[in-house]
Image 1 (tube, helix red, strand yellow):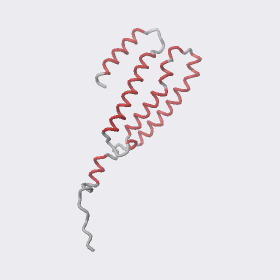
Image 2: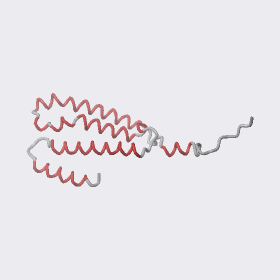
Image 3: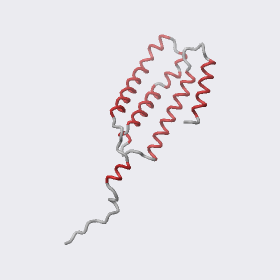
Image 4: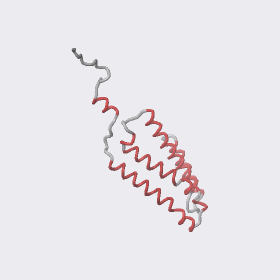
Length: 141
């Protein structure tokens, strides 16, 4: 993320000054959404390989990432082709943006009500220390 950020900012500034007459810069938005989708997939890849909580959905970060991913993928083509839409088409197709904005905000709401401290794997291990390695109790007959 630290490597791609300066390149993306330089690209965005270049595109901003190149297309000042345009009402919306769909190329910068497209690149931004692709980067967001890639970073969200990296988050899920990291969580699969090195889980930090017992259930991935018990963390508020999961809900934030899912909401960003759903909004980005749902509005990807709308914003990609937005430069070619006239005002009437923009009003007609902006319902897509409204629907995914509502979904995103509902998922953000779920993230807000999630507890800050998730049920981590480390706390589960401390709750049952060495349970697998303790010898079974002797059962006299």
